[in-house]
Length: 630
Image (tube, rainbow, N blue to C red; front, top):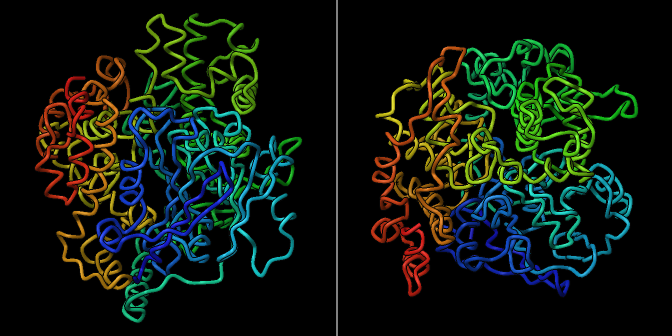
């Protein structure tokens, strides 16, 4: 097999054993790795009603066919599992260097089963796989963990790459992330699942390179694509010098910037935390680059911290999502403070998107009088109170007191406990906190969030760009008629990027038909035609949705909280808008080939070669029946 190694490490953490398992060629051809491959295994192997934090849950760390190849941004890996935050399938992606290094060791992914009796770490060096005691590492943050593992492993031909969890993952906080090379696979509580298995870290070093079917053709494509990326104004200028916060003022102008727990969509200090401010104040005129492996875009920058106790520490970022949700959403307009928070949160190993939402939600509850200082560890937890905000971050990271408990397990659970109508403004869908685009600012964004399989999600697909930011394809943000088709198409198309495991930002210049289809064929020699290639994305979406339906979820979960349906935006170009999910959801299901509860039909599954899913979803006893009746 070319492109993919066709090899997975199946690890039994209970017994500290492993075996190398082949990927069937027909499965490789149908998935190309990443999201589709993880969902293919998850729906087969994770039993219905499995408790997400039990030894019976399985964590998949998979790469894609382009990971570790010269392809532009071919550096990503996916952490997929049954989410403890939502109870359904989640797939969370990280960049950096760890994914390519796993491929260099000769593997396409790792399947983690069972639970170690004591803290353990793994070290992979090509064909050698070791299980090593991690007792001394337990309690360390991700920065300390990475540094100590490198010391323990000693001198190596090249630096080893380390993936780990922090204290939040160890104690199975539901917002816990997995951190690798300062990059986070953060969404859905994947770090909590890793912590539930007593697995602290996986370090890896490899000496191989993924096999390519047509090396010369592949490299010709790569050279031409990198030239285009280096000329595109977004990838060669906006992202390269102002990072992902380059869009912040545009989102603010639209009225979509989460501010004070999504009470409004504009922040009065937006200019202090946008990409230009970051470039000048934090990033050495935008030249403090720390790109992921083999990335010509170089959107990630580093900042040398100078806060007391953190002098000389390096923060990679902050990214747009972190800036908005730990910044404007909490009423914080200080870029240095946000950068410090970013470093601290990555150390604890928490999702900055969810944490920013969680703290902002508790701030609103406190200001409304729904909770008192007995729930805030004695803090005056108001919007913009920088000292209380930072103390809340530490409390969530360490799990200290009532605030640590409420602040690290998501707004859905916090609202259920607090009551008093607070669920109306708890910014989540299906238990996963909203990203940094107010869904009232565009109907496509609203629909994307509401029907998101892993919960509120801006990347599956990123439609806000087409509603407000793009100079290319545009759509009327206030129209509902065209959004079901747009979301259906773009979700499947973006899923392909999650299968081959490249960064979303290449889509500013590269496309599926003329770029990634050609790369996939040159890597594998499979000879896909366009439709067969596009089917991979739709297959990935339907596998994930089938997992969701099998767990009994359906239409009643494809909704937004009351605030976003009934409270119009008060500022920005989207002023007066609310989400109108009911005008779009039926047509969306119809276009997807799902029934009126959002369950994939037998005909749809059959058309994608997913007959085995029909048996799982429609077999005797009927998880599909349960979903349709839900």
